[in-house]
Figure 1 (cartoon, rainbow, N blue to C red):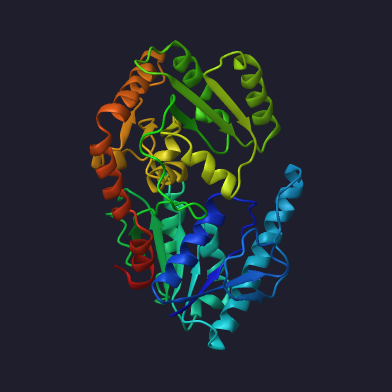
Figure 2 (cartoon, rainbow, N blue to C red):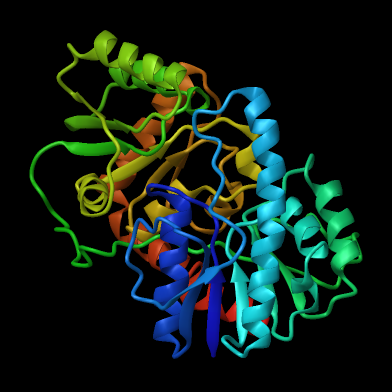
Length: 377
């Protein structure tokens, strides 16, 4: 099957870039022929090795450096251009360029745009993917989903571990399990028994909500039976996040067991950093993680790393697979207890944890994702 990925989000790296890589590589593995439909002059950050077709309607509009009133204007531009891109994709589909279209990262606004475009009449299936729907968004999503329900070739796929749509009566919404993120550059298995300290890693985009300082304080005060090192990597986008992360580096630079990396790790550097640790910590106490799947959690699973997580971070995963420990609250005693439990797990339950990680990788596999989207399985 010839499948077009209609991508219009510009990101230097991270979730969207890697999700597109999953789609392309797994579709190729299953015998499909992926291609891209993208706006004019689209700046790809990765060479996916797939044909590219340009959509008419102008370049991508970003909010980078915009003031609040500029953002209002740009949001109107975005909507207008999105409709034009959808119209252009419709024309390509009519010409027989593809057998299906996937919109890989969407919000309910995309459905509104699609309804105002010719793509709702697409001669080929259009699969729109939503990376979780929170309670505030759900009524807006359901409203638009009901409007688009009359167009049978448009299918909505919500990546989620929950079922919050039992009573909505929508026939065009399918719930899909999240996929893991796996190493791309280094696919060799890391050494099982390395010498030195147990290494716990904190990685990714740093924001205040990730509760890093209470975690550092708990690490300093914890008593471990073996040497333990904390690796803290943070990429910061907003000035306030940069200032906070720099203040934490300055405050704790005298602790030899803590290694800070204030940098944006991409590609091979990112993979090497993740593979260099024994476990990955995600003390993200934000309610939205109950509804949106945690990219870092599914990266840890894909890299076969045990985890230390907050109760809000996709609790369904650890309920089904014993792949780590849960921090019951942000009280220091609870964080210390969970850290100590994790270090104990790494030394005494390595075999059981490895089996659980293998099982999770099977359930959240790339193969299942693509089959669920394209075949409705």
